[in-house]
Amino acid sequence: MRVSKAEFLDPERALQTMVLCNDLEGPVDIAIWEHARQTMNSDPQQMVDQSKRLEEELFTSETKYMITAITGNMFQGQGYNFLKGAPEIVMGMCKIAPEEKARFLALVDQWAGEGLRMIGLACRPLGKLDDYSGYTWVGLVGMEDPVREGVVEAIRVAQTAGIQVKMITGDYRLTAEHIARSTGLMQSGDQSLEGPEVAALSAEQLQERVRTTSVFARIRPQDKLRIIKALQANGEITSMIGDGVNDAPALQRANIGVVVGSATDVAKETADLILLDNNFSTIVAAIEEGRVIFQNIRKVVAYTLSNSFAEVLTIFISMILGWPAPLIVAQILWIHLICDGPSDIVLGFEPKEHAIMDEKPKSLKEPILNHLGLSLIGVISISSAAAVLFLFHHLYSAHGNAVEGRSIVFASLAVNSMVYIFAYRSMRLPLFRMHKLSANMPLVWAVLAGLAMAVLPFLIPGLRDLLGLVQLTVWEWLEVAGIALGLLAVVEVGKWISNKMHANE
Image (cartoon, rainbow, N blue to C red):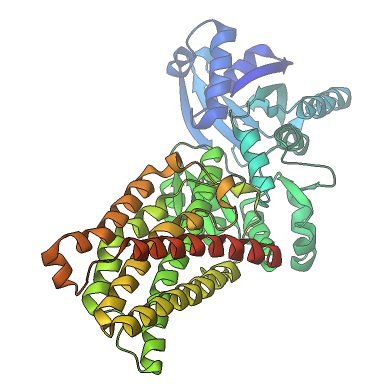
């Protein structure tokens, strides 16, 4: 932040106010201190060292001004009260000619329309701090607060993702509106409200107005809490970003309280998250990462349950039909821990899908398993179970030995899951539109390792005996591969049908 414009009636007193009514706390104080340094062409600290602060009334969000009582040799034995704050508040404490007042009010509107933040300056001979009258208006400074790089793009991404971004500020209304328009936060049809207007609204009226209001200016701390409550009453999930002690009630009430790294200790203790880099873009990036994580959890759960229910269904139907068990415990453990285990894990690290931030926010009641996931579990379980039961019955009938049937069932279930896992890389997109396989190389290596572990027991006699297997013929391995590719096609068709039926998921 820096001072870009200034209009003084009394330059000497204006500079004194900028330096002696200043605690160097926050960007506003620092900006006007630096402007005083450049104007005086000397170090303002020298002025501070030659004066004595008797008492002060600090700036607060409610009062929007600061007053100091100063004496010192530089004033030749006379002291002054220096006042700085919101122009309309400061001007209300001043004796000022009507024509000068009109000129400066017009200047306030003009500078606010340019997006400048303004501070009014005034002083008077030393008196009681709680006497808020008799000041002399000495000038106005306008500060430019440039928008951080990346914020405009972050707001656009958030809006595309169905996230409403609203500004709650103590700034002048025209200043806030200019900043909101320049960042894309305020669009056609959006409104703005000032603190006194918010205070005059009932809870029901505010609840209705917040729907179309994107900028709240000259807001008091208690109004922030009311705005949060109104949004929540409309069924919105709210995230409040703040930094001060006065923000604590609103931060606590919001579903997610976020504070910047430079926030007060009280605000940090109240908040859920601390934004260490003070960058709004980081919040949008975190939302995107959250969507990726949620989406990957869905993939892993649907994939894992597809494998498990296929085996459960295979064993259950065999029991009903009075057949021998098509799998033994050791074979089941080998499939799930050795073959599928690594791939289950690395599927959860699939990179983000294209246009994930084009989706609208999901309900808090959104289940992990949606219609698509449930459909795929059903389709895979039934198709896989039907295929391996057919093979089991065929070999068991032909050889009169359950071990023959178990061997091909084991091979088929182990290989199937290693093939159709690639269809689960995206629950929305077909195979040919997904990321390249190189985007998740750990998955490729996990699948290759899983296929090797499915074949290895048939090649090592001791391991083959331990798992209760016999060697398969080339033709039987071709049958296993054909079923795996067929299930891959089944998953793709199931995804296409389910996405057509449930396009909004």
